[in-house]
Length: 421
Image 1 (cartoon, one colour):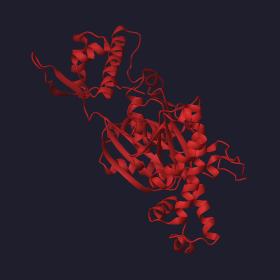
Image 2 (cartoon, rainbow, N blue to C red):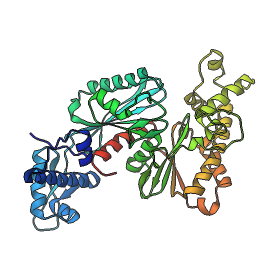
Image 3 (tube, one colour):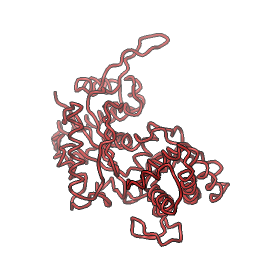
């Protein structure tokens, strides 16, 4: 059964070897137009979930016979399914159509500093499979990239999925990522060609990359705590600090994809060297990495913690350990988390003054602390943000937790392919 490909026509021409095979003859032009109309129907159903022929005719301003013909072809090709009759008060009940869940699939891969996570979405955008806590160490080496590819292949094999049915893989990655060009400038930047091309050649599936904070922002927009708000900041607070920005209901990435490097604004008059090579960045004193360093320094100075035994045995103290200690009422952990939150609040105050958001969503590892983190953060924001601007800004904690980034990048590759971004 022949199936058409639903990528943007320019992408099809440039990257997929003109798989539609349309030329200058009249029949090919007609087929090309036909496929564009089908793509519009699929895009509409991606955002509206279901519709009648009359709905599509009205919304897309096409004739009923044209829509009826296209719907029938899409059903035969396996993209649409008949959901049954629409309940009406009287008269002939119309059929309702929606996307066929098993038409194709989308894979999301979250590349973290110490682990990998995977999620598979069906054509309708629902989660079918996921895998978390796959051990991994993020390094800018070919070996680390190869491990990402091997674990991705392993996941596909474990879920019994035919690779040809996966029409896109999205990879979320920390650091400076240009999703438009496909280049990552912080990790896996040792090839002359875009990282997306490297991944596509290695895995044989269309690849897309995105910064983890923007992926989280998109997850919150589509499946999280963002409801009607159109101007939103997602604050990703882990070992580093980044933001995802939503302006007029669209992801904002800047000219070259680097918008959101919040952790590298010069905020503190210190001589601490940041990972970016500069000094005094927000991350040097207000991040999970800074918290880990501060915690060890305080224990070296003789302060006591529930983690003292672990540290004396030579075991590394990680951010998750400190958060768990705070949940167990460890005073050192609580005190240092509060200090980090207060310093971070200064920077968030600047963001509010600049962008005047309706909503700030707090996510990332440190958001798991709860009030020990949120209360000093809000106190500092009230102190440093202009009250006239900040008074209308609401705060919510992400409910997606560790799933936000992997879910967001899977949804992003689906949205990109279905032309709904």
